[in-house]
Length: 104
Image 1 (cartoon, helix red, strand yellow):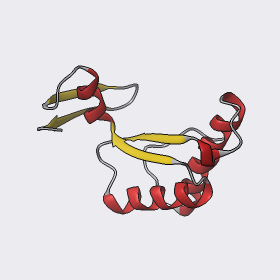
Image 2 (cartoon, rainbow, N blue to C red):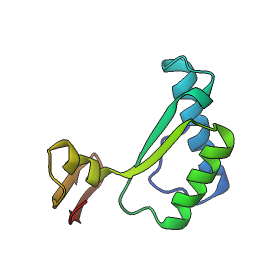
Image 3 (cartoon, rainbow, N blue to C red):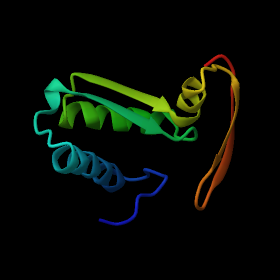
């Protein structure tokens, strides 16, 4: 498996994401029946609506989870601190991003 990239540009990239989710569920969580579990995907704030739609469609058809939620990482960061508005600074290994969130 190659390193995870920030962009899902092709169907192959999307399939690799699905394979990664399946690997994490079956290997680490020991879950084989996805229909009895929920799935929360945390995405980057710069993923476009079309890509989010593709990911959602693929997850729902391949896994059929009981519950599914896809949330933006900066929003969850604010919620974790009890806020709904703020400026989120994300400093990673190779990328730094700033995202303003107003009333969640």
